[in-house]
Image (cartoon, rainbow, N blue to C red; front, side, top):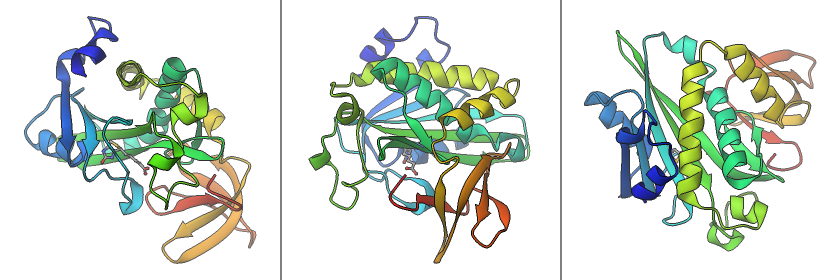
Amino acid sequence: MKPEILNHLPGTHPWQNLIHWYEAIDSTNTLAKRMIAQGAPHGTVIIADRQTQGRGRMGRSFQSPAGFGVYLSVILRYNCHPEALMHLTCAAAVAMCDAVEQAASLRPGIKWTNDLVHNGRKLGGILTELVISETETAAIVGIGINCNQASADFSPDIRDFAGSLSMATGNNILRPRLIASMLRSLYDMDLHLFSCKDILLECYREDCITLGKEVSIVRGEEIRHGHALAVADDGGLVVKFSDGNTETVSSGEVSVRGMYGYV
Ligand code: BTN
C-alpha cells in the first residue's frame, strides 16, 4: 500500500519519508503517542490497514476492519500553548472535506464537532489528542474514513447511521488516492493553521450541518434541547437552550444529536 500512496503524492512532498504503514495495529493514535515520546518529527504519519482498538471521541470505539477504510494519524509538534490549538479539529475537518471531495467527488458535511457525514450517515470522524510538555504542544490528529463498506459490513448497533464513501457515491474508493489527498490537505492545513485561522473557521461554519438545527446536547446522563446558533472561534458550539439560556458548549464535554436522528 505504501508505494501506491507515494505514487499519488508529488515526489517533493515534505512528509513522503515520514509515512509509517502497518497491516494491523491497536490504534494509530496510540502508536503516535508512543512515537511522540520517542521524538518522532513534525509530519510523522501513521497509517494502518486495520485497527484492533480504534478509538473515537468520548471513549467510544471506531470500527476499523481491514480492507475497507482509512485509519491515519499525523503528529504535529507546535511551540505554542494548547489553547492556541482549540481550532485544530475544525481545521482538520475542513481539510478532510477538501480531501474527500478531491478523491471521491463528494463533499461531506461536518456534524459538530468532528464527524464527516452525508445523507444522515456518519462517514468518518476525527480524534485530536494533545501531548503537552513545558516546551511544546504535540498534537495527534487521527482520522478514520469509511471507504468501501456496504451497510451489512457495519455492526448492527451502528448500521442505521453509519455509511461509507462507496455507499454515498456508488463507486469503489481507491484508498491510496484518498490517503494521498488527505496528506496534501493536512499539510496545507498545517501551513495555514495560525495565519489563516479566521478563514479556516469560516470554511468550517460553511461545512457544518449542525448550525441552524434543533439539537440535543448530551452531558453524561443529562440531555438538554436547544437550537445551534453558531460556532465560536475556539470551536465551541453556541446553543440557545429551550429554557432561554444561551451557552457555548465544548466538544470535550458534550456530544450532540439531532432531535430526530443522528444528524
Ligand atoms: C470519532 O468518531 O469520534 C472519531 C474517530 C476517529 C478514528 C480515527 S482512526 C485513526 C485514529 N486512530 C484511532 O484510534 N482513532 C482515530
